[in-house]
Image (cartoon, rainbow, N blue to C red):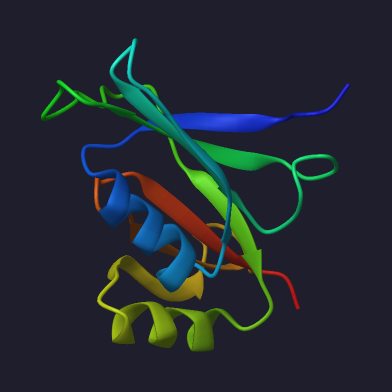
Length: 127
């Protein structure tokens, strides 16, 4: 068994795809409109779905906003140089919600960014 994908709902598919591909350097793996159901799915990730977990972006055409609730935490991404990645995200217009630094009660260097719909993405320095 393995994790295939995590799905999040987005209010603007083009804006979401631009964030994940242009700001976070993922690839758009596939995208399909479902006119009968009035929704679009797009899959983004760093590797192919055949061997990597990816993110499914779901846009329901008739929904303008979502309530994220308080149960979802964040998506985590490992990065080699967290300071350079945060500089690139900031330069691309991304929102850093927690600047890079050691995590509370530990030495691991982390940062948090927000996607256009407000989802938290934790960056963890790995190298």
